[in-house]
Image (tube, rainbow, N blue to C red; front, top):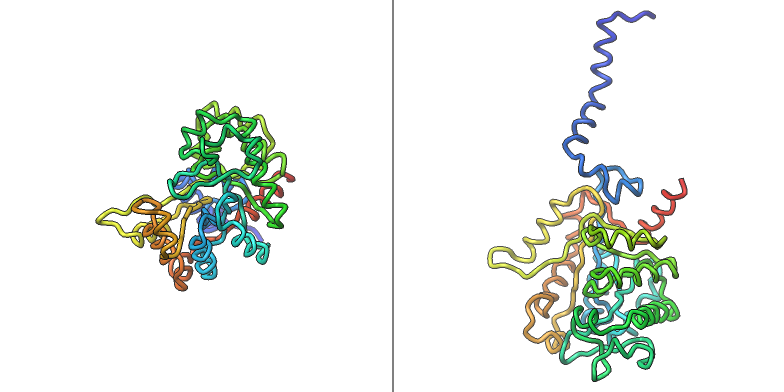
Length: 324
């Protein structure tokens, strides 16, 4: 059947409207067309989220808070501190849940006066990483000043091997206090470890903007997974409670891959003795995070348009994308 010009024009307008709407939306949101999510094959409007608990193994109260809050279904990733005094406890739990997204929080510093951590490698092999008392230095700057790079690699490799030998299935590695990605020399060691063990390496996207860091990245075939947005709560302000800060963050997520780093812990004497009067990352600070994420209604209230993802899922997606 023939079609009149007017009819044809009308048909083009009607059928072209959805495409026009998509193009208008894409033009308005062009910055989302090249995110980590789109590079992995997700749609540019999708919001992917990792809720990641750090410092597992640090104290028993940290482990208890994670185990309890994780049952609510919002915390879907975590990393273990091998030098922590409660390491054995969390490893026993991790072995029971191999499908969970377990990472290693590679640790080279020990900041508290009354809770010092040692290395996993023999002390004779990592002398430059340790202070006069045989413990890790307190700050990142101290490590950068005194540590021998070969000995740094010996230690982080020993931590990874210990967790694997203990039977935990690992999905990624990350770095306590960012020691391994705030220096290009340390970044090289970090990537080398990921490449040697074929384990994804977490690096904040904002941390590799410098030319020097990009050159180091180009040297390796390490399975690096970037997230578009990394959020860590700072200290509370008088006009903003923890609930306000987190509710605003979750309700205003942008398309792409977001990761929020949390540090929940139970409000017990052990934690208070360990943290002292510290405010940011202190006992009360961590306990409030536990209370917030230990809410059975949280997932239904805030995440209707969010897709939860994990390091394991993103790594699998990256391999599928690379194979095309």
